[in-house]
Image (cartoon, rainbow, N blue to C red; front, top):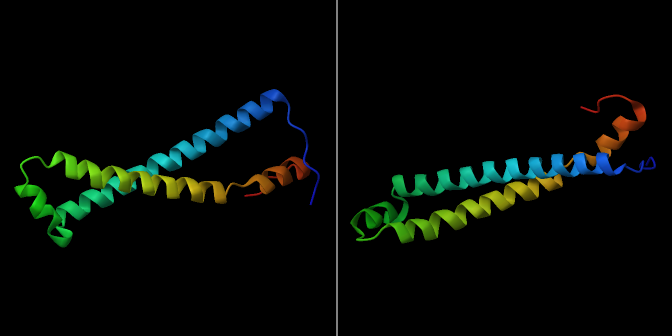
Length: 102
């Protein structure tokens, strides 16, 4: 394994901003996918949930209590996967060899 070069403050700041942008994008996509899954559960009436919500006097709270945790869970899973596959070793190989690892 090659020795990692020390980043300057500016390079480190840019690297952290890029990493946070990468993770925020993945969280947003996971959140969106979770909300789509929750809404499909309601629309497809899985387990009679959609019909119960249709008859409820105040369906906002049950929808909120189902959709938000589901979206947050999917978002957290997407961020975990994004952290797991971060290409740091490839980034350092690119600096040493001068070639794009992808």
